Length: 411
View 1 (cartoon, rainbow, N blue to C red):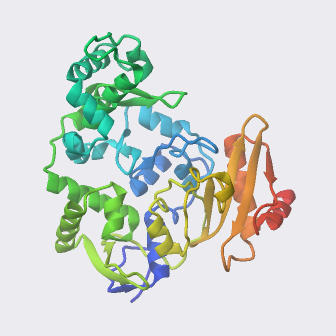
View 2: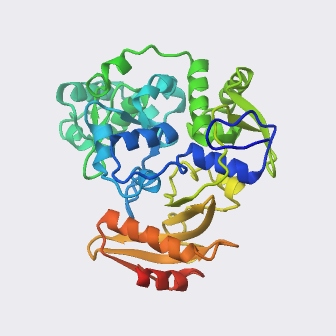
View 3: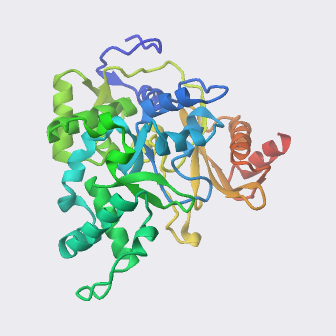
């Protein structure tokens, strides 16, 4: 077998773990050269690789949706992403994809099956509002229609009192909005400075050609989403393909079978993997990967923790909700990618008031290369500059901390 990075690889019967890792990195955009001045074209390239940016409220470093672009492009204007989501021509919309995510508008029709299943799959509080207080849901939708774009706080101020329900409160109005959001009857026009969703009607937010696009049947929708996940992964097991858009096992398995039959996916055996794997027919398996990147805990390269362990032999758990004395590595820990390996992890915080990037802890992985500390220091400097932080302070915790502090001091 001859492996090249100049054109798609031919069908493979067996892959080493390192080949699988390189295929995954190429699929996620880590083999693409970082542009000198990232622009809308660079954003489109990354969107075409990942097809989603997970959103999370934690802002200890930066909002989760911004970090994957930095990991692949280096320092960029976050307004590129804001404009793609919040202005016309809109290229991204927010919906429940992996979790709450920014997704290309072209995938809206394929996600309508989830909107149609709100009564089965939406969270209990939302469903109860829809079942027990339909008049509230109707009122809230009319508020969005008449006054949108609006936040939940905007709506709650005008929610009428109801003797039957002892008064509708802000949480009920918010649940009604979230029910309508899950159903696709309202969508997110943007997020404001307080990280609140700003709601409006889809026909006032999405491009007309997306609103008018036909809705695929459920089987075709799953086939579309699994194929997108396969392109984003390069090579993956069926559970990993399923997880990308949080699909059900039965429907994901049926989609995988269809894609294999049509030779869009090619079954392969990856050394050390117990489950069958599939490589997308257009996937590249580069001979070499020369990446250097800090990864958000919510980056699609690592957000499926079992996959991260299978690919990189890197056991990764987010410890935000672990009591501080029981944390192993820290509160907000980012893996560090160097070449085709995850070689270290750092617990980071942006102290915006002091203008300092705080490295609370730094740990090297077994057999990390000698240049790990120097390369990590350089990437931390780039991150600090991007975040508008002038200094980097490295605490002594972790087996890499001393060497990292010395390298930071040399910058």
